[in-house]
Amino acid sequence: MIIATPAAVNKVKQQLQKRGKGTGIRIGVKTTGCSGLAYVLEFVDLPQSTDIKLACEGCDIYMDPKSQPYLQGLTVDYVRQGLNEGFEFSNPNSKGECGCGESFAV
Image (cartoon, rainbow, N blue to C red):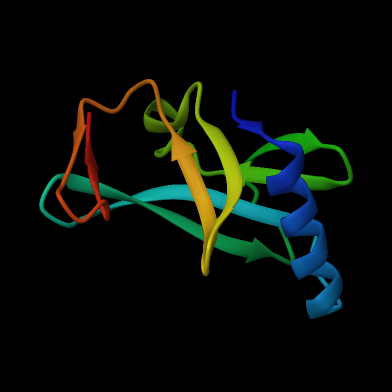
C-alpha cells in the first residue's frame, strides 16, 4: 500500500488539471544512481493492464508489479521549503541513500 499525503494529492490534482487530461500518476522504481534504485513518477492517461491501482481521493496512484515490493508502505508527500519544492518519499524498505539523495538501496 502507498500512502499519499493531502499535499501530494492536491499537487497531483493541480498538475492533472493543468494538463487537461489524465487519471493519476504512476510511481515506480528504476535501476540507477550510486545506491541502486530511484523513484520514477509519470502521469497516467491510460492505465496499463498490469498496473496496480490505488484510489486516492480524486486521483489514482498506479504502480507496476515489478516495483511493488520496493514501494510497500511508501509515503509520498509534497513539500515546499524556501525556494525548493517537490515530492518526498518516506520508504520503510530503504536501507540507505546516496549522498545526493537521487537513489536508494533496499
